[in-house]
Length: 115
Image (cartoon, rainbow, N blue to C red; front, side, top):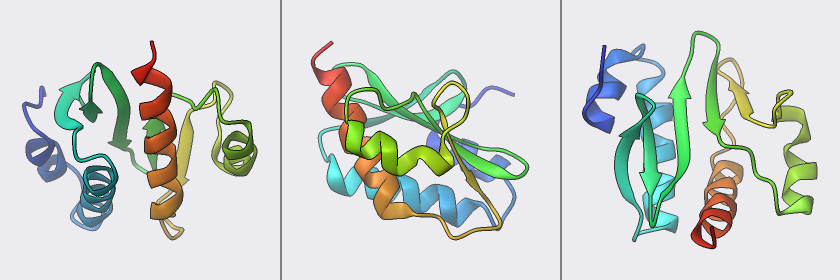
């Protein structure tokens, strides 16, 4: 299935995951009001000059992409959530660290703004 909006994507995930996805969207929009919603790689995403933040729901976690590469302090803090390639995974059976995800969005925006 191809998605044309964040809302359409959110409707496709389990009902108890929808508020988590919405909270990520709300946080990014509050912190980066000039970023716009888009769908990229069939996932909800945000773009400014280019797409800089993707998030997706899976069976047992929410993934955040791409990996943060320039903020070493944040990378160290994210270590428990980082996969082999640096992408982030937040298990659905744990509280979602929305403020940390907001900091990730800001860091990625800074990184991709200069590319």
